[in-house]
Amino acid sequence: MIEVLIVDDSALVRKVLAEIIDRAPDMKLAAAAFDPIFAVEKLKKTSVDVIILDIEMPRMDGLTFLKRLMKAHPVPVIILSSLAEKNAEVTLRAFEYGAFDVIAKPSDILELPELEEQLVNTIRYAASGAVKPKLVRQFETSTEQRLTQSVHHTVPAFTGNTRTTDKIIAIGSSTGGTTALQEILSHLPVDIPGIVIVQHMPVLFTSAFAERLNSLLPFTVKLAANGEQVLPGHVYIAPGDQHCTIIASGAKYMIKLREGPRVNYHMPSVTMLFNSIANYAARNAIGVMLTGMGEDGAMAMKKMKDEGSYNIVQDEESSIVWGMPGKAFQYGAADIVLPLNKIAEGICDALKRI
Image (cartoon, rainbow, N blue to C red; front, side):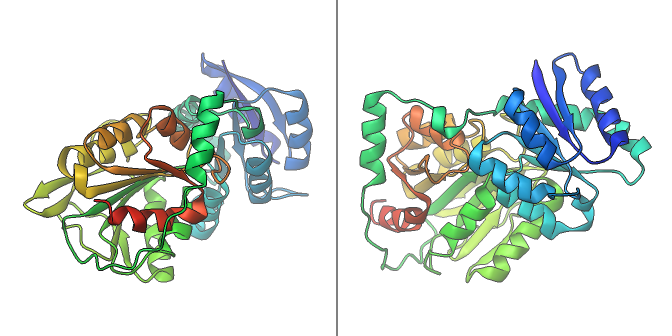
């Protein structure tokens, strides 16, 4: 059973959400709290798999609670707020702080049951990627030694000219990935080969995310469009309602957007991007797996490595959640494991290897 904690200051909202959860055969209400302070007390006594969280609440707002929660005890959090559609900046901050997903709360609470299928499915997706707190995760001694050796690998800064179209960088990220991506991209040279990114994010906000990065970075950052060429100095963000893949056309790489069912509970899926990289780019590619829940893309990243790509995996300490990168490491997909502040250097170093 998936145990759900509801945090919302409206008694009516809590009642309606509780009824939705009770109707799901694989879920049960673990507890309900009228604000984050009370939720903290509930978490001390109750086992929770997923949290449904409002933003506007007394004593502590939802974003502050989310930020503190993800640092202390990572739990999949679904934001359910009326601010979701009205304020893209607030929504992007929720993703920065580690929200699994964001759903717009209807202005009329009587319309909330209309979201039942979406909400129940999102809870299931979130629970499927649930992870234990970092402090209790254990590794075998040999794994710890390999990780430590990888983390302390030193890479020189990249200084060469990369104005070619036959190299490509593919990045997969989820929970906490928006901040990680900004950190990495801000330390890359402007003539970097084309970068294609799958960041788990609803369709309403991928465009706002791309626009935000474009305003902060020296690259051209845009939503990926079907059929366009992957160019140096460009960053392509997968739209939130399609799978983003690449195909080869001579020495060029082209974006191919695909509709279809979710893969590993996600659309866009890192698995779809990484499989296409393995099929069409292989030895000319660098793969990067960043923080995120679940294991989307982990096995596909191993396929990339087997086909000759050079793969970088974010380390546990700097990840908001070491789910996707942890699984990639476990499956043997990593050539190197690096902390977030070393990944840009790692990419530049890798460009000299391929």
